[in-house]
Every structure is written in structure tokens, then in C-alpha cells.
Amino acid sequence: MQADSNTRLKWSDKYSVGIPEIDEQHKALFDLIDKIHGAILEHKGTAACVEVLDELVDYTRVHFALEQSLMHMGEYPDYEAHCVLHRELVAEVEAMQSKIHSGSAAISFELLHFLRNWLSKHILGEDRKYAEFFSKNEHKSFHTWAQRSDEVIQQRKKKWWKFW
Image (cartoon, rainbow, N blue to C red; front, side):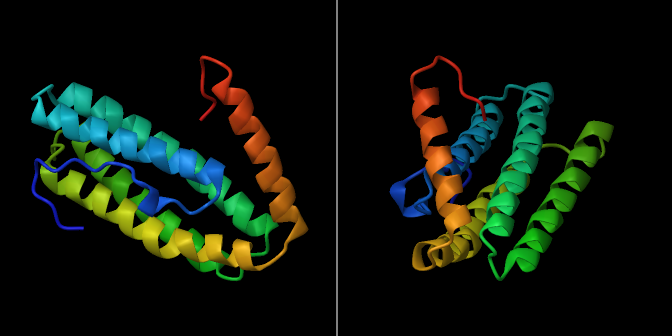
């Protein structure tokens, strides 16, 4: 995904993996990256950007934990390799986050470009693989998880708050 610094990353159905809870979380990740982009474009300052970056890092950890539990429960064969990709991203972003917090780096379009490219490529590549695995294989644990997830999403839509 090549884009100039003014092009905003927006969710579209092409990113859907067909698992509602995962799609909802991916939408939240898109929104957080877009918030960082907006803060940069609007010159809101380092503190505003760092606050959103910290939220993105925390949310990413939660999202990865959920994805990994789903893959583990569903006996996804590439579970370990997918977890390695998650650990590598978290380590890379935490290193950037540390540099930003210490003042030795700033939030820039380079960081933004990295985040949005990683997210879109990861969803369209790696996440689609486990989604296809689950759609082709009838794993009882996955279907139980997916059904409960759908129920939770529907309950959330009736409330003013959102759990994730």
C-alpha cells in the first residue's frame, strides 16, 4: 500500500476476514492509526500523538491476545508462525515507542507509513489465512467462540460503551 502523507487509511470491506469480532477490532486499529495521522496533519503536537500511539500499542496487545486465543482454540496449524509475527511487531513498535518517549525520535509519517502498511498487509495476508482455515474446517471450538463473539457484539451495539 503506497500512499502519500495526506492519504488516510480507512477501513473497507476488502479488509474483512469474515469474523465479526476480529473485523471490529481491526476497525478499531484502523481508527487509532487514523487518529495518529490526523494528529500529525493537524500539528497537534508530540503529546497528542504519543497518547494515541500508546493507546494503539495497548490495543494491539489485546487484539493479538484475542487472535492468538482463537487460533489456539481452533487448532490453527500456523499458530506459532503467526504468533512470531505478532511478537516481532510488538517489539518493533515498543522500541519506537521507547525512542519517542525518551525524546530520541519523533512521531513521523515514516512511523505512520510503517504502521498502516503493516496492518493492511498483515490483515490481507496472514489474518486471511487463519480466517480461510476456519471457514473451510468445521472446528467446534471455533464455532462456539464465533457464536459467543457475535452475541457479545450485538449486546455492545445496544449499549453506549464498547468493551474493546
